[in-house]
Amino acid sequence: MSVGARFLDQVDRAFDRAASLTNHDPTLLANIKVCKTIFYTSFPLKRDDGSIEVMHAWRAEHSHHKLPCKGGIRFAPDVDAEEVQALAALMTYKCALVDVPFGGAKGGIRLNPKRYSPAELERITRRYVFELVRKNFIGPGLDVPAPDVGTGPREMAWIADTYSQLRSGELDAMGCVTAKPVSQGGIRGRVEATGRGVFFGVRELVSIAEDLKPLGLTTGLAGKRVVIQGLGNVGYHCAKFFSDGGALIVGLSESEGAIANKQGLDIEKVVAHRKERKSLLDAPGATNLARREDALELDCDILIPAALERQITAENAPRIKAKIVVEAANGPTTLEADEILARRGVMVIPDTFINAGGVTVSYFEWVKNLGHVRFGRMQKRFEQGAYGRLLEAVEEITGRRFTQAEIDRLTHGASEEDLVNSGLEETMIGAYHPIREMYKQHLGKVDLRTAAMIVAIDKVATSYEQLGIFP
Ligand code: NAD
Image (cartoon, rainbow, N blue to C red; front, side, top):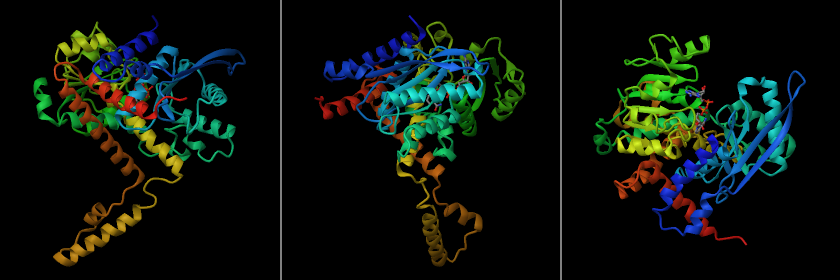
């Protein structure tokens, strides 16, 4: 069984476990579970040296109960049909949990981006988009990609440009992809969104004393010892926000190795060191670990896998010392590991909920693209004026003059980034409580992953029931 097939089997089994605890019609559940459509293409790439290489690419749309479909595109060496289907399914459940009105999708091209020049990557990306356009697998009302492992704003800009060139005159063309650079119709706050969402979700979770007591933890993030696997987009932003929130980052791992410091690592210093030396190892104030996998087993309160799937397995789960595992990556814990962690009393915060910040802000970007106006542009100054007039009235009534610093702070009108971060915070906090309630409703019988899946299945099933069957 390929790695992708094992991942798909893991997602399907998680679905089955949750589905068996719902009262929905079994045929409806079977329909929700399967991937609705999958596109495969191979195309030639002319490399910079003139040689030709054949590329393999996929796009899976797991659910059409809401359109467009939404999900990242990854550039990685082991991408296959099953992996994109597994990731597309997770997207369906994730969107449902955070009330983002999209079906789940995922795409990927089998390649190691480090082996290609930027010009080659651009040719690959543009040809892939051309193939997607030809088969109606991309468009603001059809299917809207975003970044994933190995891709970022640069690739999203190429996608937007290729789509706009091919669909000349389409008014909403910019809504064909999200996480674009801000100057290309992107939205402020998207780059940080997944890490920030993880932070908001965990901060909410650790604010409830009753839930932390069985773990032997007190409330609040301050002083909590955190280990993070992966220092890419998600891992870096998790490290930054948790550190800013008062947590101690006591361990970090990357492809080249792992480092630790019980007193807490200085993230910006580590990042600067890695940029200069191309390695985390020997970072200032840090001890190198023997193997990169050892970071996962460090003594800590919160372990955040933020790299790839299937990192916590039946093999290492018995040695995990964290009290809470936060799945910032997609599918980092196998089902076998899940069972071991549950038996050992470790709380696992599932990917379907905790890393949904990225898709949430992508949704805001899509709404912005369809509206053709930046959030905050219409009301920021109006709000500032209204707050200013209120302060003047307070000054008049009380006779107290506000300082300029107070006026600046109190009359601040919401910018695009303020609104995005506030919408993200509201979404992550709002999404956690129904999951927690479901967990409590089935106390002792389900973990948080299953509780989240039940909540997601209920929402998707209700949507399908209301839609009926065509024709
Ligand atoms: P990325 O490519 O920016 O970062 C991944 C990092 O993990 C890289 O720096 C890589 O070197 C490192 N890595 C690879 N193998 C490793 C290993 N064995 N040990 C330690 N580090 C290793 O990707 P990303 O966007 O940060 O995504 C990371 C995970 O988060 C993926 O599972 C992705 O599906 C998920 N995710 C990403 C987003 C997003 O908005 N980017 C949203 C939701 C979920």
